[in-house]
Every structure is written in structure tokens, then in C-alpha cells.
Image: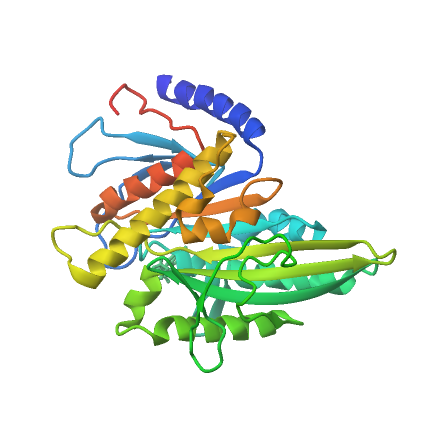
Amino acid sequence: SGYHQAIKENRHLYNILQELRGNIRVFCRIRPILKFEAKSCIEYIGNDGSLMIFDPCKSQNTRKIFQFNKVFGPATTQGEVYKETQSLIRSVMDGYNVCIFAYGQTGAGKTYTMCGSSNGSCEELGINHMALNDLFQISSIREDIKYDIHVQMVEIYNEQVRDLLAEDGANTKLEIMNCSGNGGLSIPNAIIRGVQSTADVLNLMKLGEKNRAFSSTAMNHRSSRSHSVLTVHVHGKDISGNTIRSCLHLVDLAGSERVDKSEVTGDQLKEAQHINKSLSCLGDVITALAQKNSHIPYRNSKLTQLLQNSLGGNAKMLMFAHVSPESDSHGETISTLKFAQRASTVELGAPHQNK
Ligand code: ADP
């Protein structure tokens, strides 16, 4: 049909652009519909990275198609998601800087993907856990290189960077520095801990999450209103004394939901403005990188400054755009898909000129 032909042609164009673009990948993950939720408004999920969404309030011809590197439907397992991520993660051990972002509105599944979930007997490991297992495994089996692994964890809240690894919960304010001359550390004053195993890192992450919530009145509120950045620094030395330095950033972004400006004031309005600004700066940086612009606007937000060394150059980036399928979230879902689509350069039109 014309519809499938349109997808096919767009797909071809998309593949060519992907080749040109290099190191930015965008995966979309659709979580399952939860109990008591309204109907799904995501109707079609191709296994070719395309997805179709329609507006449940309008009768027809409201379909929009989006194209990503991959779309993971509601039935996708954590293992299947990790399988598509694994080679990227492993490249950290070969000296590449890698950045993984979890993007999406609160409740769309960011925590589930990155941290997993445990309900009773069945534990579903998240990307973080599986990635760390992989890194430590490589570190233990490579006989030609000796690796040292260190971890930092910070949060960015209202455009301030704070340390999350203080034992006493004092989340000191930090300055971002130019990495050159600091051994590649962009926040040299942040606490840095040597780690030997996945368990070591998970314990530090627990401390970090505790500190992240500590300073807030409403725990869930704060953790969805700040960005957290866990950085795994890898330092390798081979037998002839050659060294590699690289890092893996696991970034849990603040919820991307739009706050209705007429309804919030004071602190919440300030938070919302900071989040909107930093997410849109991130979008601008990614777009500029994808278009290979000569000027990349890193300096416009703390998040992009912090990650500057790991965005662009031969660094690799993966964004997980999380969406909820339920029709009540239609507006937010469209905005997440648009953001993510911007990161992957090509936006596809609807099949019948009805954008
Ligand atoms: P976020 O971190 O974006 O706020 P969560 O990860 O907390 O969202 O997800 C919201 C709810 O949906 C949780 O109850 C979570 O267990 C569930 N959920 C999210 N993604 C999935 C998935 N892929 N499979 C099963 N349940 C999921």
C-alpha cells in the first residue's frame, strides 16, 4: 500500500542519513499499559524502528509516524534492550567516551530501563547493572590491559551541580572545569571512588540516590526534577605502558513533562524553567552534532558543559526516549517523540499529508 511504500522510502533515506551521522543513536521504548490506564494510542509498532501514534480525541487522519534507530515495544525484555546496547558499552573499555541518556516524562519507564525493578521473586536487572557487569567482566579477562575503574555521581538541580557521593549527605556544590589538565575530569572536586565490582558501584548509586532525595521535602518530587549523572571513569594501561582514558556516563534526566505555567509558581516554576532550558539545550547540542555544525552550544547549560567531552568528537551517544502508550499521555508522548526525533535528525510525515 501507499502507506508501506512511504515507510520504505523514508526508511531508505533515514538509513543513508544514519550512515552520515555516526555516533548518535536514539532508541524509543514504549512501556506496557498499566492496570487502570486508559486505552493505548500507539497503534503500530514496526520492527524497523518506526512507530505510529494517533490522537485519541480526534476521529481519523491524525496518525503521525516517527522513525528511530530502534523501537522497543511493550513486550520487550530488559535483556533484549541490553543486547542492543552492549557493543556500545563495551567500547568504553577500548577508549571511547559513551553517554547514555534516559529521557521521557515521569512515569514513562526511565527508572525501569536503567535501574530495573524487583517485584518479589522476580528481579529484572536494568541497563546500569548489566553494563557494569560487562565492564568488570572485560576488566577481569583482558590480560593485555590493566584497568582502574573509578566512579563519580552528581546531580544537576536548578542549574547547580552537586555531589551525591558524600557519606554525610552534604551534597557540596561543584564547579565544572575545563577537562584538559585535570586528567579528563570535568568536575575534579567531586568525590571519586575506586571500585572493584558491580556491587561496589551499585552501593555508591544507592548512596547517591539517598543523597538525591535527602535534600528534598517530597522525595519523589525532587528525584524527578533533577538530572543525575553517574560517571564511570576507566583508566587502562597495557604492557608497553600505553594508556587509555575513557568514561561512561549514565544520565537519568529530569522528567520532561511540561508544567502548566499558569498553575505553578515559586520554586516549582523555577524548577520547570530550569528543566525546560537544560533539556532544550541538550536537544540543541545533539542537533548541532547531528548536523555537524561548526559551533556546538555546549556552554548554554550545566548538563552539556559537564558532558562536553563525551558528546561529539568520537564519543558515542545513546538516548532512550521513553513513552507511555496510554491515551491520556498523548500530548506528552508526542512531545517526547518530537524531541527524540530532533535528536535523530529526520522527521517523517504522516502517510496522507495530514500532519
Ligand atoms: P520514570 O522513571 O520514567 O518515572 P518508572 O520507571 O518509575 O518511570 O515507570 C513507571 C511505572 O511503570 C513503574 O511502576 C514501572 O515498574 C512500570 N514500567 C515502566 N516500564 C516498564 C516495562 N518496560 N515493563 C513493565 N513495567 C514497566
